[in-house]
Length: 299
Image 1 (cartoon, rainbow, N blue to C red):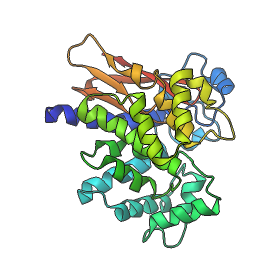
Image 2 (tube, rainbow, N blue to C red; image 1 turned 45 degrees about the vertical axis):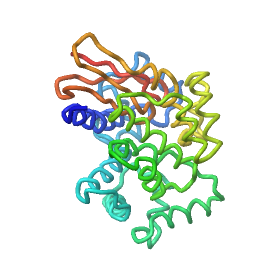
Image 3 (cartoon, helix red, strand yellow; image 1 turned 135 degrees about the vertical axis):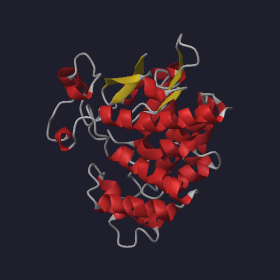
């Protein structure tokens, strides 16, 4: 595969994360009823984002902690030319200490431990055990897209980076699956099928499998994505990526020669992989509940 194609897919993944995150803020923590009330015709522009107490903390068009933390990982990759988990942890901590707007409670509790930067995975394990091993928030899977851009050791890297804040095996499996989906699209030009995804899930936690099957066979509504008690559950987030509307059916070939679009992550943040030129297209995402269902391209 040509290097220029790979480069454009890298750019598409990074830009797509930021675009999806910035648009995703428009419905974050809303119920379906609230989304229907505030966005009866969907959302196509940042100017439409309602300015309530949660959303007014950001300028319209700003991304949130999802992309901030993804960029910490990316900056570390660039600076170290390898995966250095202590360097990534240091960047996470510096981001938090400099405001860390939008940081989740679980992530904050992990990074607030005194020795976090010297042994971040141990800190994550301590907080997980203090919570009786119940916490499995989506704060790691939201930032994992960039891990899929590494050429080798994707599963191992996704696992180690996840465990910098989220130690639960459901979180780890979610990150490995999403990173693997992106890696297959970028480097192999293929979509992982449902059996491949389930195979990965079983390596980490059997509890992942029902959410994959439910979303794939029953649709996004079956995930109850706006359930207030579990809105941030990593397996609901992961499940949203496994619905055919979010992955299998999202590989769209336009009539324009050589243009392909891939929608990879469909909740809170998305990755759009575009070739050959991301800069000449206007990206717009549609929302339903907390889920970005598809992307339209104005050519």
